[in-house]
Length: 448
Length: 56
Image 1 (cartoon, one colour):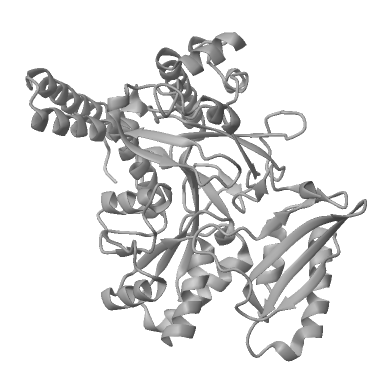
Image 2: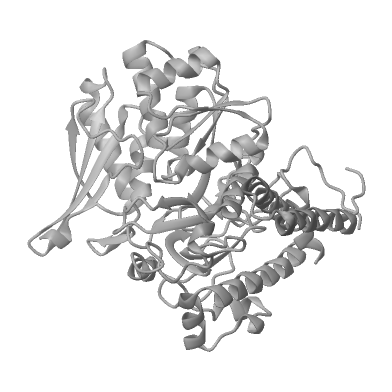
């Protein structure tokens, strides 16, 4: 079989440039295989499929796949903490095969436990190797990871992915922010990974507390973000790139799924789905219809083809995404999602009868150079009416521009979100700072 | 990039897997053999995902 591809540009050109029809055939075959694995090894999956009257052997087309029952996080929560403890009967391998425990952050409720075998962990690192190679990481990179290594998977897999790729990895675990910046400077680290919140926070600390300009005094050339949508929000990406003098790339992953999507060097306004390792379906939130066309938002339902301890098969992620209308100039045949995850089905909420995605607010706030990086949105109920307040900080030296900024901010927010906000200005540095995942959107209406 | 014989590569990956399984069969419980062979199997699986799955 003759394959002509460019091994310098792709971690695996065999998969990343596979013609679409071959990719589809592969995905259907791999779906059938993981479904059979789960059916044969997990009581939970067997009961789920038997009840729905579907068997792995039935899977011959994408339509067949769309009839396989979805798994929701609430179902996983219901199973866990039972035998085999603490994972319950979704587990597909004997307990002694498990080599790693992680759990979700619990942002949306009780954390979900995620067991992995060594093979699963190799797979995590493999998925990250695709990401990092696509973003220009090579063996010559020295990658500093300013991450508090703990029970959350986040940059653990980035660490192992970078090692797999042959990079030199510096684990910046328990150091504080100043020490991390100084170590990056001392070692002339070329790359780093963090949430957008922390990337901006580190730059702020470098300037204010250490008198360093990360763009000039450090050697970081590429940054990979995770955990929040910021690197796919143009205004936030621009702030990070300017602050660090580096290219910033997004990636998306989740504990119970894996690292499923990545931005490439082209920064095409979207992220490639790693379709060799995952199947992404986009489902209309109202009708459940599978959306194949671009520019139509829906809820992601995702399958990881090769994760064996606790399989992820048609997992209802509640992430809101849409297909990109363009092919990417990088040459990958993997489809792209436009602008990353634009919200969560849980977060995209109706305020005053208007659908609101918090990412739209961030795009406006971070697009105004007079405003600081931090902001907070609080939705409350006053009588029968929704009230939405936005707290922002003026940059030091911009205090005299308050009225002008207020006008621009109100106009742009109305244009972008079709809503009016009660905007208040707060002293620079007074709004909460976050090290990992930020919680800037608070819907308090249920509490009223 | 030169032509690649994926079937031949896939066959070689299978040999790695078979050899690792052979080690496990002959390990007589020696953990130093069992656990390291298990890691070889995990790596062989990644090779299968990247290559062999395309030709099967």
